[in-house]
Every structure is written in C-alpha cells, then in structure tokens.
Image (cartoon, rainbow, N blue to C red; front, side, top):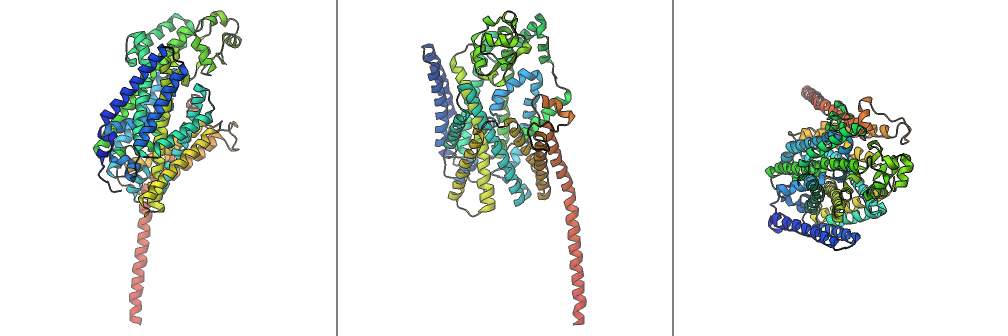
Length: 624
C-alpha cells in the first residue's frame, strides 16, 4: 500500500503526547488521592470501587471515540503516526495480558527462581521479532502480518493461508481473554461470568469500532499507564514500609534473607530454601525447554508485530521494539517482589499460628476461593480445624498445607498488607485493563486482516474506501460477538485453547516470518511450512487432549517422557508445539531445495518439446 503522508497535526494524541498523557497521569494520581481521602472520611468501599472502575472505563471509552476516523490508513495502521515511545507502550500493553499481570507472580511463588525462564524467553522472542522484523515490515509498507508475507513471496495463496492463521489464532486468543475477564470478575465481584463477558464485549466494541487501530493504540497507552500504576504502587508502598526501599526490586535481597532466616529457625520450612535454587524442582532440560517455548510464543504474535507498522519510519519501528522491551520488563521484574512479600505474609501470619489468631484476611481469601488450607477453603477456624485435624487449632498449619492461588496472590495483596481499599480496586482495574489491551490488539489484527487482505486484496480489490471501512467495522463487531458467545459458556478449557492458538501462530507463522524478515521468500516453501506446522499442531493437540476416542481426559493422551516434567507443572502441550515447529522447519528446508530442481526439470522438458516441435515443423515444410 502506498504510504500517505500522515497528518499528525490533526491527531492530538500524536501531536502533543506529553501534554495529553501527562494530564492523564495527573488525573489518575488525583483520583487515587481523592479516593484515599474519601475512604479516610468513611465513604463506603463499594462506592470507592465503583468510582475508580467507572472512571477508568469511561476514560478508555472517551479516548476510543475521540480517536475515531473515516480514513482507511488511520483505521488500519493508525496513519503511521505513532511516536516510538508510545508505540512501544501500546505494544507492551498488547503483549502483557491478564495472564502476565496476575499469574506470573504466582509462578514465582510456585517455581522460585526457575520462573525467570519465562520472562527471559519472552524477552528473547520479542527482541528477536523486533530485531528481525520491525525494520523489514515497516520498510515493506505492509498493513498486516499476512500482507508482509504476501509482499515478500508475491503470492496470493500465501496471503490467504497467512490470513487464515492470523484469524484463527487471534479469534481463539480473543475468546480466551474474554473468558478470563469473566472468571476474574466472578472471583472478585461475585458476578455471573456472562455479565462481565458481555460488558467487556460492549466496551471493546464502543472503544474500537470508531477508530480501529488508531483507537486501539491510544486506549492501549492509557491502559498501560493504569496497569503500571496499579501493579507498582501497592508493592512499592509495602516494600518502603517493611524494608525502607520504595523500589520493590531493591527490597528483594532483604526479603530473601528474612525468608532464609525463618527457614533456618524452623525445620518445617526447610523446603523453602529450594526456592532459592536456580533449578528448583526442574531439570536443566525443563528450564531450557520452557525458555525456548516462551520465546517461540512471543516471536510470532500478530497483534504485537503489527505495532511496527504504525510507526512513522523504519528507525521509529526499531525504536518501538526497544521501548516495548523496557515497558514489558517494568512489569515482569516486579512480579518476584509480589511473590517474596506474599511468602513472608504466609509464613509470619499463617504457618504455625493458632487458628484463633489468624488475621481476618485469611478468611476473606478463603471466602473468595483464593486460599486453601489442608485442601479446604479457609472460610473459618472451624473449617480449617476440620480439614487439618484438631491439633492445628493450637499448633497451626505447616507451609505444605497452604495453597494460595496465583490470582489471589496479586489481587488480594493490598488486603493482606492492610492498605487502603483503593489499591485493591486499582489491582482489579489494572488486571482488566491488561486483558482489554490484549483484546484490543487482537481485534485490530483480526480486523485489518479481514479488511485489507481478504476483502481489499483477494475478494474485491476495487471496493471503495467506504465499503472497506464498513467491512472492517462489521468484522470487528462479528468477532466480538462470536468470541463473547463462546466465552460466556462455562467449562471451557482456557489453558488448552490458549496453547492451541499460540502454537498455531508459532508453528504456522514463526519459521516463515523468520525467513521473510531476511529477504524475499519463495511461495511454495512458505505454503508448505505453514501447512505442515498448523496441521501437525492441530493433529497432535487433538491426540494429546482427547486421544484416539476423542474423549477428554480418557487416559490415552500422548506426551513424550522428555516433557513429562513440564506437563506436571502446568505446561502440558510443550511437546506438541515443539514438534509442530519442527515439522514447519523441515517442510520449509526441504521445499527450499526441491522446487528449483522440479521447476528446472519442467523447463527442460518444455524446452526439448519446443525444439522438437520446431524441428518437426521445419522438416514438414519441404514436404509441402
């Protein structure tokens, strides 16, 4: 697509970003301080939570509407006018879903230092994507990921295949994100999941339909600011109160030292020292596989890669990747502080404490199904005593008896630390904002693929701009509605579907994007690689989850012994993803060699036939 000069002057967000977002941060800080003052004056907690919730979502809605546009370039690639720093912030928000915001701290609590492999792998995948693809994608003036592959291969078939992969992966991830919002809201607010899924779907439609990628960009910037303030403020306050360090990462050594001292004083806490071991309960092979898997998942995410296409220049696209790594890192390096401080809370206030002396937050966690003692939700001292035995009433419970969900580890952090209720609400709003930002990126990638690749390039190349925008908005609304209908039904396997979607993108797009980033690619090897990777991923996923009789959990699932360790800690489909990526690579390498020989043989045959026919024609002429 021919690059049009972006009219940045008419975009207030791009023309005056420091003024706009400085004002946004000032209003956010002022709102938090006002709510703290109102809480001190006795304002009911539900009222405080409602004000913060409505204020945040109303700001997203206003930003999305103000960023509305009637120009296709702005709708699909935000006019190519997003400054690098803010583009990196939007890309980080698109990558940092609710899973990273909530579950990563819980992973540190369960794995110890071994959890760093996930963050390092994600950083390597994002960094490789930025290094290899940011410049080439922006230089090619592509509009979508499928468009970039089609430009490099000069193939309509590649465009179609890549579009189908992007649509399938993005839609499944969108459904998982919406279902996650429903589960989170049900656990925090005790509302039916279908209500929150519907509300999130409506909010997404109102935010993104007016401006497409442009609306998604600037709402993601706002959402990143909210989620960062929400994630950093509570843990920074607690770190300053307990250790004198307002930067939580600087408090980690002292927190670890206190944990070691507690473990040394109590023989029942001996296993706590394993958290300081680099490998923990993992083997080096498990950690290496986890790191590579995380990198593969992060490399080929269309809703992240397409952020490079909204940059004003190639250099700006490359800077975007560096800013994205910085903004992602700010969140990921803070997660260990949540885990360490929570371990201190558990050991100091639960382990070995008589049941009558347990703090109130223990039972609040139990009622929210976030804290289990001896396998029973900690709803009351009587329930704990019945589950753990009568001796626990005086001697308390051991560390092995405590099970705190990863979601509650972050969401209930402010309650455990006796902070203002404002921060509890902020954490909830931050988690929802993280989910909405990822959903926005997925919808923008999905909509751009439908509008540009399928309609404009394949189905109706001559369609006017009005019809293109109409198709884009219609596809966005349809995707939101279908994903919400799927997510609203209970009993969905979110982890399995998420692995399938990420695996399809990693195996179907990862190898061919790597080749396309290095220069022009051949169409036939690219098609073969995408087909081999996606078919292998789907076939092995079905075999692993259902077995030959297509009954979930039937006991005949197939997981190679080398990956049993990862399956036991919640990464069941690692083998499937690796084998699918391997199949895609093998197909790509083999087809890079074979087509040239096949084409040369065909040309040779045609040449000989042509010469023979000419000779015959020459011999036939004298006869006449």
